[in-house]
Image (cartoon, rainbow, N blue to C red; front, side, top):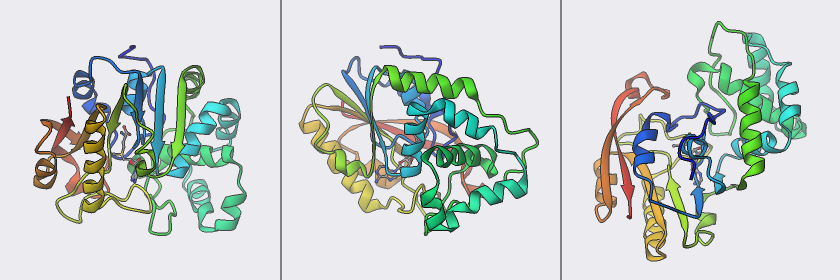
Length: 276
Ligand SMILES: C[S@@+](CC[C@H](N)C(=O)[O-])C[C@H]1O[C@@H](n2cnc3c(N)ncnc32)[C@H](O)[C@@H]1O
């Protein structure tokens, strides 16, 4: 397997794993037939490994359809992106299209993907954030540079998604429970557990509660029963340490820069849990 590809993620994502990569790569099982990532987000590990067979999923439909457009229509996406400008008034016009649900639903998937990419690059702190109604609500980032899409990166990811055998799914990870089989390696990177309500867990309309963390642990148990290797990342809270006490837990340091609350940025302890 090619462990260090030249592919770079296209989106900056809350909880992105770029800086944990060395630990994650070091902790991979020796071999596997298919790489599965049910909470793919920005796909830092996926693109670093560029496995030839993979299943990726996320509950965020906008994100998933972005990857599908990158795969199927990279040139159209790039030419659509050329119309976008890094200007405050333009930003809010593009951002607020989703306030009109009917008008938004009529937009092409290509335009919606361009909008996702553009907002990610120009919003404050690169933070994908939606409110309870699912409307994108990160403010303008006031970056100085001209908005230029990373054409080479888009084309490289598109080529990878087409050449490799990649299944792209959207929906809850729970829908995939029966899809995993022996020979798979499942990397689980859910929204992190937070000690208080001040942390950032609203990646999508639905947050990820402690009940959700417990359901995910049940999936880990069933993977273990089926002899399927998994690796899970999460924050090093007492709750998570206790929940996964029967598994192998490695504590690592990470610096979190993408968080809506300044107080939640900085060095934090995270865990990497494995069943092998
Ligand atoms: C910590 S982020 C993943 C970050 C990713 N590993 C990266 O490198 O960018 C968690 C992801 O889980 C997704 N998510 C939240 N709840 C989910 C669910 N029930 N099923 C599947 N995905 C979910 C979010 O949309 C988000 O993209």
